[in-house]
Image 1 (cartoon, rainbow, N blue to C red):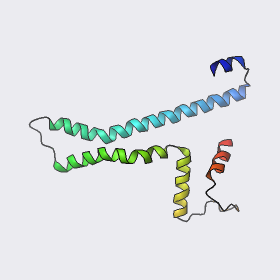
Image 2 (image 1 turned 45 degrees about the horizontal axis):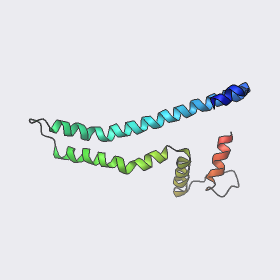
Image 3 (image 1 turned 120 degrees about the horizontal axis):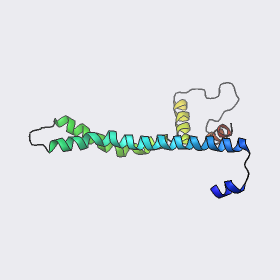
Image 4 (image 1 turned 90 degrees about the vertical axis):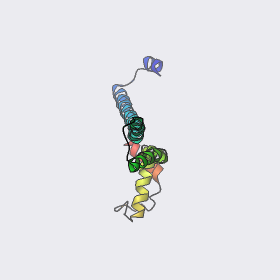
Amino acid sequence: MQTLLLLVDIHPSVKQRCLVEQKRRRQRATKKISIFIGSFVICFAPYVITRLIELLPFVTINYHWGIISKCLTYSKAASDPFVYSLLRQQYKKVLINIVNRMLKRDLYPSSGHNSSLDTENDYCLQRGN
């Protein structure tokens, strides 16, 4: 791609749009990586710290705290698919659409548009703007 960019003269406005899109992608990637690492630390840190403290002979851990920290660790594996899917724009839009349908909200009050399942076309139109 870099070779192609060197060989083809790109109009400044096109180049600017590409740079803006590249910056947006980097920000999204940073956000996703931060969420991955943050959720791992939040879910596993209490359990690991608790287990390390239990190694000390003079410390006793509250039984309920032990259960809570273990459940938090297990909940990570159960919640990961949902959390990671919400990071994708298409899934987020469909989820909002489902919630609005469940709450019986009118998604298109002023238009004659009846189908709110047309998320792919809405997504394409939104990306074009």
